[in-house]
Length: 392
Image (cartoon, rainbow, N blue to C red; front, side):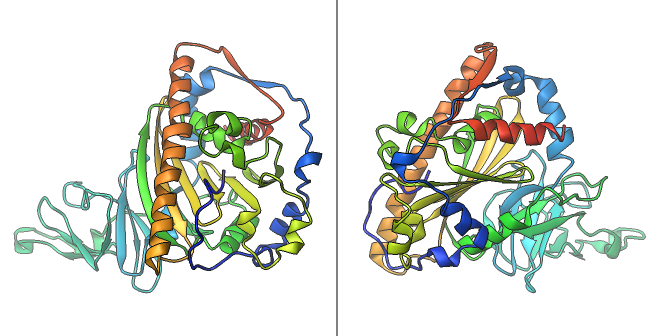
């Protein structure tokens, strides 16, 4: 999914074809003209239990979400000297950027009695934080720097009572954290090519215009599927954006368990790439990424959408949505454009894609269908499932 409707263009930095990585450019130049696109029939199935079963959910938690690093937030959200709490995976975390620019992650639990130190999900620009229970104070680097009535403690060594640190890394503008402290982080599933692509798209340096959390009654894969296929677009989004997109397969590349899809807009012809070489490439093509294991990135003409799909149960998912713009709105017109774009994309994702996931989950929970069948416009779903199933 890309731009949701034609709107007046604000003054802003453009991404041209030449700004992209050679791999992105190569993929874009493979996109056929709309009239030449061909759908190849395809048939594959997956059993109902992968969306509804507690056993499958538990295997995914053990084999993926508690085994490998997972995306928690965006680099662009954290300026030096700031910190944010997150428990979207059902695990209390703190993610900070110290004044020297280093990203750190910790368990959001005071070393006195385990209390959460920050309870909200707002970004806090501060150098220290104080536990609300007994007022122990920590720096955003995790060091314990103050204990109320410290003279009442016998043998308390503040150097041994810092916050418990988690392995964290920035990758293409996304902050990944290893939740399981019992095993070292395995970063091998995160593709350097995709990180380079994200850098070319400006994800790490973007402005976070909007941020919203959705609590959905649906399996995380049911929420993910629409962003891996084009079959639904002209149908589910018939009244909103369906007329903007081709009903044809994308150009697809896989980098390990990471998928990159590129597609042309309605009326696309390859010649337009060179005719508008200095123009906004997002006006011509849409990039859609699914990065391991649960991050979705979709480009649009004026902004980029990033979604983190965090499983909370067999039929529950927390989605963290971020709308990124190349820079903050610098004029009233730009603010108007971004505000309308944000409102509309939330209605498309929230009111259509996420709604479809929840009403699908209701049927799946009732045991129907016993197995889901996929067509030639949905092959990316199967490719992704094969990649994650190999890890279970």
